[in-house]
Image 1 (tube, rainbow, N blue to C red):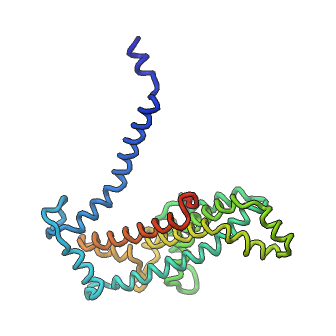
Image 2: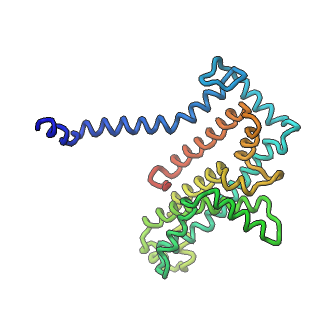
Image 3: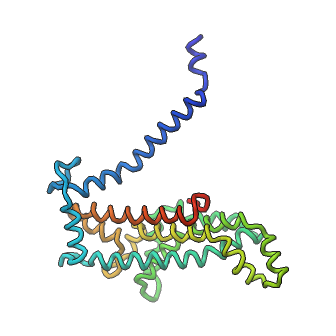
Length: 282
């Protein structure tokens, strides 16, 4: 009887805190293990891919730099061109997604219309839609068009993927802005449009900045949908890295991956510094 009572007793607050800390530490360790493994392998001094490495050096970073400044003749596209394409597509995705998300979030927050709940659910559909199916569907749509799209098809696809993140952050900012702010601006002589542009949009700054940076990160790292839409002349960095591992794993990929992780880390750090944790919605 005493054993049953001991088993049925709930955890004390201190024990619950320790258990949550241990569980969080285990989950965090599992999440960062692939990244730590990649970083360690990028400093391997061995010619093979054994883990842990038997020796350490900067040989793969030197090889990566050599690949960047003087690409192999076997490469269908240089890393420099792939990086340029990724940056251009990410910047265009960030701009267009923001231009769409700001008025959309305003309409979803301020306006009442039939099908509003369905529209809000529809905005989140790319978050749960299978990426492979989405990439294939977009490929069929673009190939059926009477004109050819190169970079534009990547921008359109990435905007679709990034739009939910931008809308969620802009909507979160809109929810904190009362309608009395616009009413006060209109009472002082501003038109409804000017009240939105001059008063509401500046107050949405944190959500807009968070959405823009998240859109850039999503676009810059996107692989699955891009795999169905790229061609030899238009290739992003993730696709270029994948092409280096098709026939055999090129260890320089680990060095390039460390660079990508560093870029993402800087962007996330900048996001937290610019808008704070309260302005970011994933």
